[in-house]
Image (cartoon, rainbow, N blue to C red; front, side, top):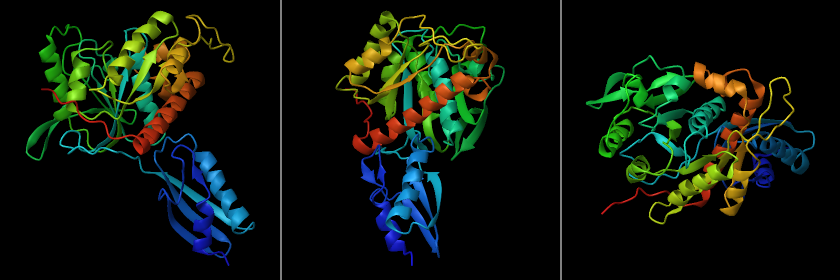
Length: 364
């Protein structure tokens, strides 16, 4: 007779590789049911974008058949409940579990392209995702998502008027570019820009989200400081290109987040435009801008190196036409961005399990 106790004991030998503990200790095993030789149960992962999902499922089946009954018919239902370690009072963004900022030291490295496709990649894997375009002076998210001519609506929430973010390709999105004429330049002094950003955070009804991805402007300035003073950021990803000059600027972004009074965990480094792959030669890689500058920088700071994103013509075309890489049919770049989303989700889960919650920067 197969017993529930035997199944639980067997599954206590299956480790969650990222968190370093077994599934039973982590309370990830639910709804164990036994019918003769048939064993079924649910494994609740820390994110639907878990890159180790299939490996964990195989390990569960092997554990039951090796330690309980080799003839057992094992059915594993894999689901997810995205973890969060927010300990603030959640008066701001109350329904958002994790806030991920995408930063770069300089412009022109494809940071917005990475932010858009990261958000879409997380949604592709089953997470609920929002995307906030915090680049007040150069908003590009409306173009990249194909919503440049649309305007958000208003709704009342608990007696307060709130902006409803636009929805496209399964994610929620908000940008200053949705509120102004795109032909007009945003000529605002710092306080006006930071005030607009605060409004996007406090006056937009984001609802329940597993991840809010924030596309920061390049550099280190008012917007960055406003964010760390307003919301508890789960972690940052830093985007660079392979050239030494781009990597040198990305170091500044890393050092900003590492400052003692800011102390935002860095989830990892992304090397964008790492190599060129022609559509007719999908297996070829041409390193047009040098090789490995961002990877070396990640090693120097002992940070995870998350991905090499190829320079593919369809990525640029998709950004211009409002059909990003993750939602078009070009396999090379789509696979790269989906894998990036899995790695970022993995880094968030590890960060939440092992580090203290990020505190909002107190001024004065």
